Length: 204
Image (cartoon, rainbow, N blue to C red):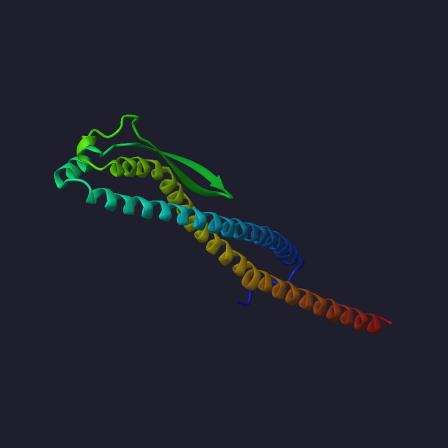
């Protein structure tokens, strides 16, 4: 993109200031991009480890539930599932990381336990329901981290586009325009000096 400007010293000064500002902004955005990348990959590592832990726990719960179900009467199992339902309170907190708004979740269940008849169901179900409730905080933490990864990837993409726009479009355009003005002013100065010398010769 070739910028059309009046080749004068006022415009040259204005463009130099704008170039200085663009270079400073590019440096800040580049630092932000590098810091975001570091945080992003660190969070990927933490999230991956937490996901494996949550998946492993839920797999164990599923297997134990299948085992406990095989030793429970169908009617007792249905009653246990119906009366083990529990409503919890979900609290959402917000934290900011490098200007990114990241929600964090916390759930609280009432203290009373399941209300089904223990004698008619497998003891394995008791452990399954308790572990299921206890695993919800880790599940919500995983959801918060994966949401943070999504938001950080969006911010990284926006920052990358801004860095590229400055590095490959605005800054080269300003530098090229400044060089063009400097070249034009230099030509004008030489032309002026040549005219003055000719006038001086004519006067002499």
